[in-house]
Length: 424
Image: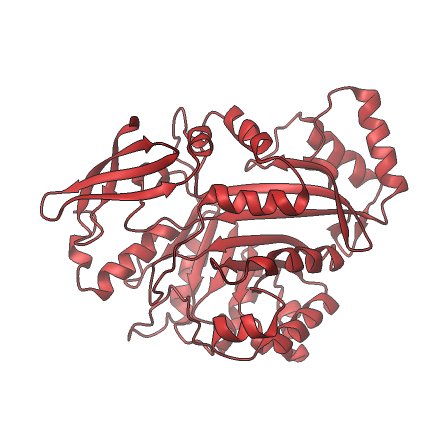
């Protein structure tokens, strides 16, 4: 046994009170061992690949400014999905004035409208127009069913909506029916076609459920490449014991990375090496990768990839590539068609320009895609020291601002009548 973090801050998974923990390694497993003064010692696996976890350990954690604010504008939903983390309480939805104040007072630039299902909100277009008025980026997190109606999509576009975070957990009709308790795949596909027709940028959200829809992931990635450039990203999430979900065994981050590596035919060890070079603000629950591929006849040939940090360095070769491509007007409908910006690592200028020229010549087949991988921390695996470097905020059931992951745990505590214990 090896101690990797002698003392971390966490919570008791039973009473939700603050507790101290230790992160240890047993063989290749990473385990969080913590003690509650009332409920004793608990041990939970947080990773199954010790080398990956060690690469993710920060030298120091700087507090990170919030760059994304998710506002649940309704508790209503038109689905009853098996995996939903959101228990619907009896409180009324926020009124428009309260939503306005949240948007106005948020110092960041990215506002995501969520729920429940936000497209059920009657004043949705009014809210989007207000976000645009405040010169902020508006995103809609949706199951997409209502967007089967193209008139609604056009109204969203005209209101000024920037992006849509669209839930799509596979392209198999039976799997979708099983996960959502409804036969809705055709509705989702028609909705996606409407969104693409109206040129709104799409981010696909894919929930990875163990021993269920793993084979669907590669199908979704092919779908994204065929929809380029309007689908710029796929966000892969694994299940978590939150809300009404009775969790199966979740995927661990290293396992999710391996699935992606198998599709793009790259070595996971290379990703671990790249991650290890960063000294701070890494989260083992959140990894972003970008891939540059030659995509032809449904075949993926990986040209390059990059472990993505939040911001590109000011004088990096990637930034220079972005400027060069921008000057050459590789833009269609306001979207950068070829985003090689984040892939180039060779510092030799002649090779750099040769690389760019080759891209220009073969631009018909060059595709890029960001893969965002997320493992949700929960009551068993929470490391509070990592919460400070999470850039996402939301509001909990009591309409108080909290880090997104922390708010779900608070909501769980409230459902069990233990919210007054939370972190105390």
